[in-house]
Structure formats: C-alpha cells, structure tokens
Amino acid sequence: MRVILVPVADRPECARALRTAFDLGERLEASIAGCHIRAHSDSKVSLSSEFSAQYFGITSKATDSAWRSKTTQRASFAAKKLFTSIAKMNGYEVARRARRTPVASWSERVGAPDKVMRIVGPVSDVIVVSRPSAKGGDIARLFMMSALMESGRPVLILPQAGAAKVGRRVCIGWNQSVEAARAVASALPILAAADQVTIVSCGPEDRLGPKSQQLSNYLRCYGIKADKIKTQGRDVEQELLASFKKSDSNLLIMGAYSRSRWRQIAFGGTTHFILEKAKIPVLMLRS
Image (cartoon, rainbow, N blue to C red):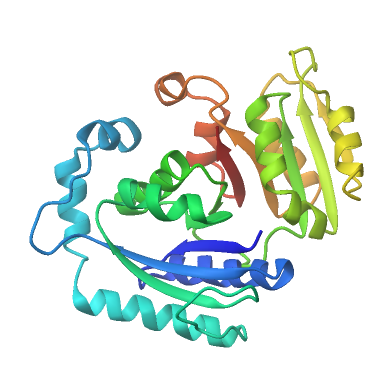
C-alpha cells in the first residue's frame, strides 16, 4: 500500500481518521492523500436519487441540502488546515506532487461524493472514513457508502470514538467467499505488518471455496502466521464480534455484500450489521 486516501472536513471524526491514516502510513511507508469534496456553488449536486434512496434511506434532495449547507470557503480552509497540522505532527512533508517517498498531498474536488469517489478512489490503495453518528449522520453515511460502493478499493471504516491506532492485531472474518478472499489480498501489507493475525470462521466450512486452513497456508507464503478460531455459526454476527474481542484485535477484515446488496439492506446480513451496529474498526472490500 503506497497511497492512503482520506476524505477530509473539519470534523472530530475526520481528525481521528487522519490520525489513523498517518499512523498506518508510517508503518507501511505510504503517502497520505487528503481530499476535501464540496458541492458546486452554482449548480445542484447531481446525486442520483436511486443511489441515495438505496443506501441511505433518504432523498437526494435532503442529502444535497444538508451537505450544501456545510459547503463554504471557510469549511474548505478549515479542512486543509486540519490536514496540514496533523501531517506535520506526524513528520510528513506536505507536497504538491506525488513522490516515490511518502508525502502528504492535498486536493479539493467539486461534485457529488458518489461520482468523485469513482475518480479519486481507484488511484488509491485504501480509503479511510468514519461511521455515521447515531443522529444526524446522513452526510457521513453518504461518504462511507460512496467509498465502499463506488471506489473499487478497500475501505477502512472507523467508529466515532476509540483509539486511533489500528491494524496491529487483525481479525479476518472468513466465510470462504470470493469477496472475503479479495479483501484479504487487498490487505496483505497490513497483515504483514501486524503483530497478530486471527482467522475466524463461523459454522461449518461446507461452501464451495477455500477453508480457513487453506487461507492460513496462503498467508504463510507471505510470512504471515495466523491463529484460527472456529465457532458454531448459530449467530454469525455475534460470534464474529465475540471472537474479535476474544483475540484482542483492533481491526476486522472482511468482504462486503457476499450476497445480494438488496437482500442485505432489506433483510439484514453480516455486512449490514457490521456497518450499522458494530463499533469496531473494519476494512471492507466490495467486489
């Protein structure tokens, strides 16, 4: 991982996301790209109503209005000031151009987050965002789901509060799926730098796909030793969280939406539960 992208506003949760990104960047020798995304001052944000309603349960008009009210010149200035100060605190040079050696770079983009993420997301290795708060979290949810659904890159999703350093003790939620395998592959640099890795499989491994032991063998080829935890699979979400706590992990890695996204949103599922209910750092990749 050489480029870590962080959408930035002058918010406490963004400050925490930046501290996490720079800590991870120091361990992985990665550059940090801060990006402030704002609405256009002269035209409406073209956030599709389908995208908004499907992932946020709100109309695009309501989202645009709430976001537009926060789009000011002062907000842009404050976001850049926050990014620059945290970069300097972590010993990063703020540079105008990318380099082979790690630097901090700043940019501003105008447009709807779901569209901007299609532009800036694919040219990063991981995106760091925060979960929405229980109340008034529509804008944060907009950025979180835009990153997850539109970037094609792994997204590190942080809780609103907690330690800024994550990824030293990693838990892998393994369900034999292609989505989970791709999430693991995308996170290999994080896994290689971790002090501890634990593979958690919930229920019998009777799907068509690699078993946890095969994943362990694969990781060993990269010099990564992984412990394994197997649970009964009666309540996958709760067993996964209990194993995360038991292993004293501070990052969960899993695939996103290994079954229909429509079904997960309508009827629930592990991805939906982890996004909406779990208050732990999680790295997800939507295939």
